[in-house]
Amino acid sequence: MEFLDSALEDYILAHTSPESEILRQLHRETYMKVLQPRMLSGHLQGRVLSMLVHMMKPLNVLEIGTYTGYSALCMAEGLPEGGHIDTIDINEELIPLVSKYIALSRNENRITAHIGNALDVLPQLDKKFDLVFIDADKTNYLNYYHLVFDQLPVGGHIIADNVLWSGKILDTDEIKNDPDTRALAEFNEYVMNDQRVENVLFPVRDGLMIIRKKKNE
Image (cartoon, rainbow, N blue to C red; front, side):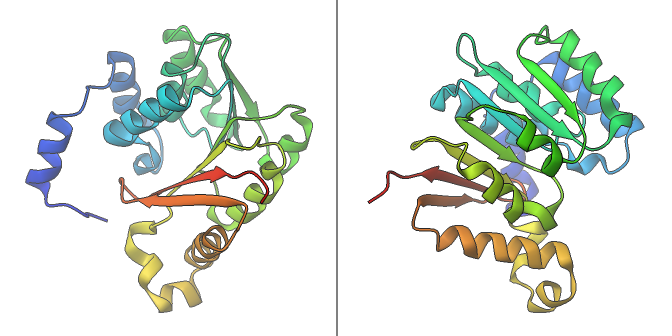
């Protein structure tokens, strides 16, 4: 969904730090070779993720939904010394492409790619995460949220992508008839009413919900 006219969007991109050459190559190869290339985070969202990680300084990051690795590479830019990303995706066919660009970025020691259903993989990752980025199958957003919440320290963050779902989130027929739209609507409402967190929904690209775990009151 276009939230801004194209001229203003062009201006925003022209006044946002550029993506690296490796990210440009990954963007191009994704659009040339991979189905549904719009799933790629892209320039603006990639810079937002990189900036947020620089600001938050998370030591351990969990990404649910690797796709071709663009967002993982962006977040790796902001990791502090000793920081690490665990990223999970169910599509093993994408691993060669993901591994190729992780190697090109020289982040082999900072990113671990896991293959499998995240609901199965997550319980095997015995660690706390300071930041969780959810960008996978929409019908499981709430399941992922519940699964990672206790692994998140007070002050930790969850970022959920696609929470505006091309504007369908406002369409009552879509919410009623489309499982993905309904799941995202339920996720947004749950987070909004979860007294354990504070949250803000940014209209960046397809909607980024940023959630911070609060101290128990």
